[in-house]
Length: 113
Image (cartoon, rainbow, N blue to C red; front, side, top):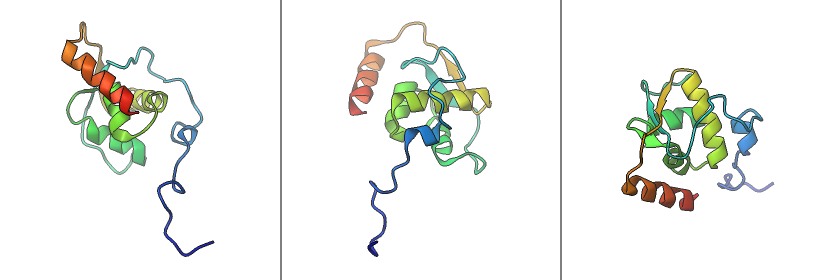
């Protein structure tokens, strides 16, 4: 073992650890374009990834944008977001129709994943 500090690759957390081994969201119906917004400020009682999600959802954004900003796979983001919706930390709504600009932003964020 070297005396070097751990690199980003060695501190990687497996996605199934973040979700507690679950692959299916508790909140059915979360889609890429579902808008989520924080109900209140993040607090220390939340685990790191969940606290980060609440912080980035200070303003409404799509599930795809949240995944990209937090740096987790889309499936992991859906599970974590659904946990936060069920816990009352996030509110979500399905847009009736998406403007072209929103679709392009979603496409760009999904590509960045």
